[in-house]
Length: 76
Ligand SMILES: [Zn+2]
Image 1: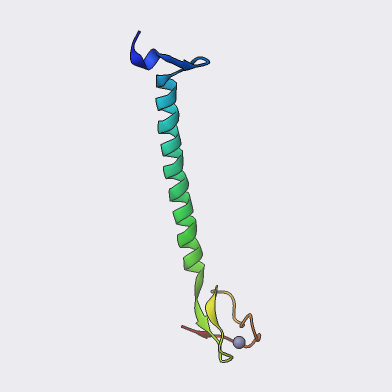
Image 2: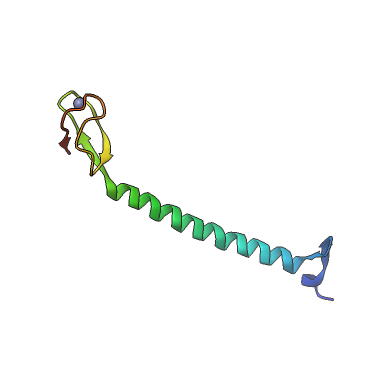
């Protein structure tokens, strides 16, 4: 009986534990990749803007008005 077949608790062996940890790491990598892609997507659709009223911030490319005064915003 090898060390990997050693039962730790309730039928769970060291092999099961290693498989579980590897699966968890893979899942976290995938999650990180998906999250990173989502963040980049969000950045693509938002850009810096400023308004004559003094408001500055980030708005959607499709937003044409200032969230503070509702006037047309200036890009940049
Ligand atoms: Zn404004």
